[in-house]
Image 1: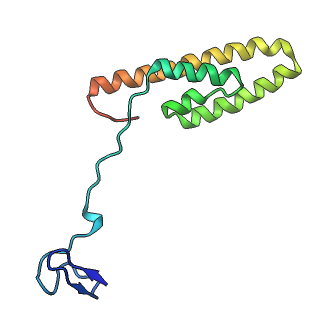
Image 2: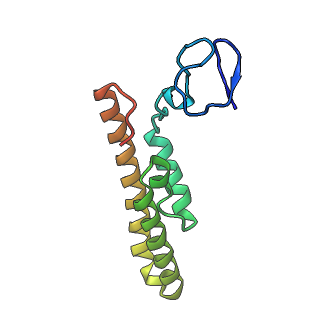
Image 3: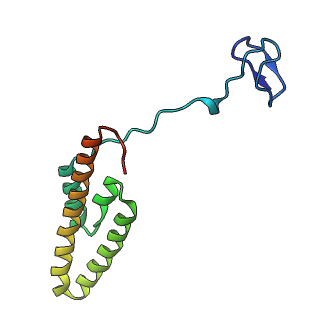
Length: 128
């Protein structure tokens, strides 16, 4: 059953583009254009804090997930878990884990800062 929004009549022809009663065009939901999703800026300071805190408990890459770099964030998470496990087995590798932890936090901070600068230059809300 199809309902005409103009004359408020029901009719059973689902594939017609005009109402058989009033002759006005049928409005489909597919013709309605929705606005693009809004993406908000991520504060670099928040990104850095999230990366540092999550990395401290062996969840490296969470800052990248926060700014939208999903694949890189998951890869860093896996590498962080491997390094944390190796550090437990061989404590001298803790230095490598520490450097990795600091680097991933800085990298997430840098990505967030660069995205905000590019967004400000372009003047739009594109989240690349």
